Amino acid sequence: MNTKKKDHLPLFGVGPLIVLPQVILTIIGVTLEKNGILIDWKFNILKIPMLICGIACICLGIILWYGANFKCKIDIHIQKNELVTDGVYGIVRNPIYSAFYLLCLGVILIENNLILLIIPVLGYIYMTIILKNTEEKWLYTLYGEKYKEYCKKVNRCIPMIKIKNGGI
Image (cartoon, rainbow, N blue to C red; front, side, top):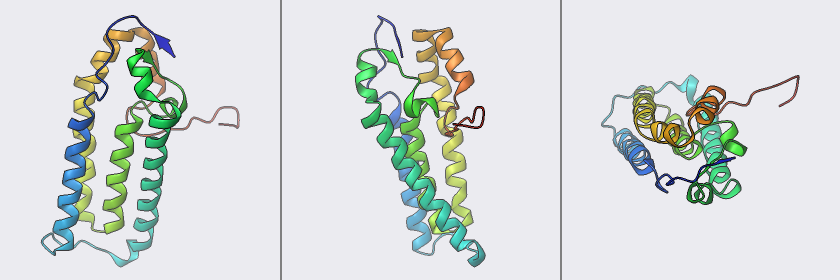
């Protein structure tokens, strides 16, 4: 963790701006699908794989959210103005946003309607644009090269566990 003595980021950052549209679009999409308003692009052969992938996404989302909020206690680090690069932040730079993204993706996958997959694609693009133009700029201003190096090692939104010398 690296500390600077400047103003810290807002506690919630751009979280509501990123998370709420994804959750709302997912709810709308699933509701439209359940009411037969959307085109039915369901394929029975994909039902079980989509269900398994959906459950896996939801579980990973819960793990990321828990890790960021309760293991890393990110709110405390934000208030202390510390850049967190370990724990879940060592596998994804934005675990809370990624958690909600994965939860929404999981729900959509479980629905097994391929037309709904446009929602997570648009959500990912939206999340990337917002992050690049807000939090990433703020963090670079606060932490400079340390943040830039962190960005080179850890993905923005997709969790990646790097395997080194045969181990994790």
